[in-house]
Length: 93
Image (cartoon, rainbow, N blue to C red; front, side):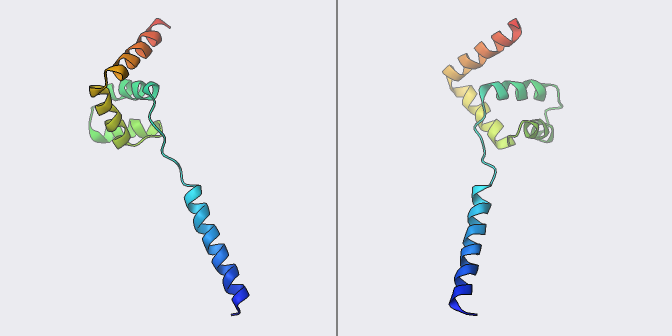
């Protein structure tokens, strides 16, 4: 094999690897609106981790993302206020 073909193969290989990582589904940040929708649906389940995970996946998140956001809600007063405002607006509609 001559050097030209080796360079071509290396270039194709590097391009393939780059495409694999650049096309990987980016994990997105959970929004307060999605959190509330998920929380409402979870309340209707048997509250097992499996049931929670099924609901969370439906919205495109992982159970870990939900649990992390849930913990943030417990400790962040501004976020609690924001969630309360969103809930109030949804009840008024």
